[in-house]
Image (cartoon, rainbow, N blue to C red; front, side):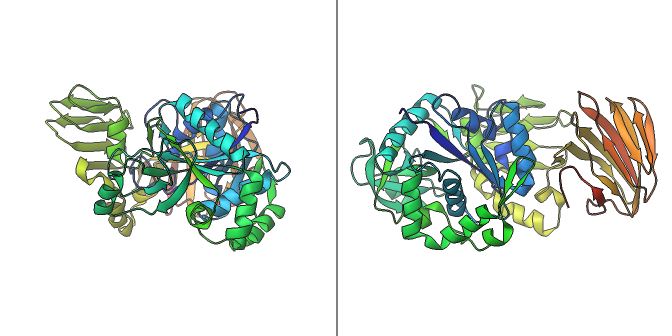
Length: 472
């Protein structure tokens, strides 16, 4: 393929199936699950290099700084990070990406989720190039995965001819089946899983939307026309975007278009949709035990033991077919056969209004992160890390005072009219109601311990006067 491919990275998700590691505030694409890089980083690197343009990334307001930071860490510079004001499923997001490359109608685009594992990058890029060649001829192409078990969580693709035929036309798409139907489907050796990977020429996809999903086109075009640039992000217009139908790419286009082909992919694909899948994809001991973090394995078999906090030790004694995932604020213990029930069980935890259901312990912000170390009716203790150059908003609180103890680096502290430097092992007091701000003027991370005292410690007790990140 002589023409470069433009990757379109879809970076949303609710983060429920891999709880407690993945949560609504920090879904799995931002986590390190099977390597030392996050799933977003692995995806971006997979489609970088001489054969690819810089990617277009679609994500939400909540994840914008996490996306930018993780891509910067691996040297990937996106041509655009597009912020969706609300989740409208994949079809509007893909149409938005098509609009952004409208100046080049022959642009070959490759749309992919950022929370999938693909072990064989060379095989994947080979399949992608085959698909791109077909797209250059006017085909809309999807990559299909050879099934390895009767999955009920995936859709299926039936080619019109033998699946080994490169670029075979698609005969039909099959929605997620029940177990009996799934068992019947995989008895057909030509059947493939639908992985949500799409390759097409921009002009062909534009025509497909015009013909089959015209109600998406005008709202998306208006959302882009009225979009605003914000610290390097493209923020789509909220009012226009809200008028987009909530519909998937499969329903809107793929099941209706006449020029759809499928290219088989056999590169060790997984969407890591459960802890059972994590166990299956991870390196194991000779007794089938996956060990991650501060864990002790004593006579366990076919078990996953994981601690994501060095302060939390996990000891497994004689466990068989068990999943144990421990974080400082939550622990999952499950039979492997029940791994797919995590999302349903999470509904009960959410009904109890437990913060652990959706909120990760570490809260990522554009300037760095913070995490709660202890909380009581009358006080809360946090660890705060501010990146070099990071600046918190100029703010005040109605219900709490704060004590800051710098434990690493130097903080530039504003309290009222006074601005001063607070060095390592020094502290400062912020009275109730005082207008204040902290900044990291150094070139290394600045860490401090914040002790809040008062009657209420919610994040909504912040009155912002100035904010370099334009938060409300």
